[in-house]
Image (cartoon, rainbow, N blue to C red; front, side):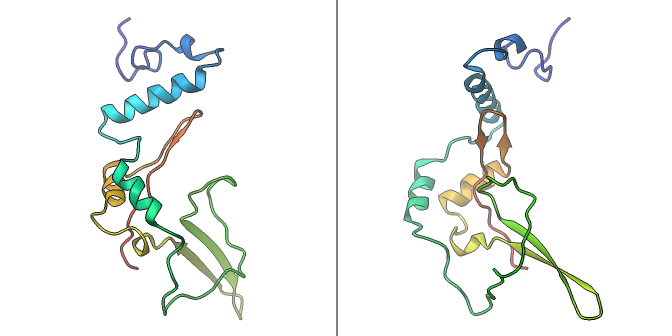
Length: 147
């Protein structure tokens, strides 16, 4: 039987047995995932210019006139407990007369990451996060249009 690139038994020239039962399983899987990203035009590594921009960000963005402090609410996220990607949260509030209001918090990435910056360019090329059991290749925060 001829294997194709989409055949999970082939895995870009690696056999499935090479990924089982060895201490290098995670490293092998991460290398395969990294190579697959590169072959598909994604950038698994942040370019030096993006890392330099990131290092220059000293903390969260400052408050603006239309920001309300809603930290007293019990927000929920679909992300894992250990996620560092809390860019959307939701909360439900019971109002008088028992209607329910749903609030959605969306990260204001534009406050720190400028259009056409190195970070923005990296995000626009990747536009996704790739998760494997061995590693995560994250998408940097992408600019969000105003709501």
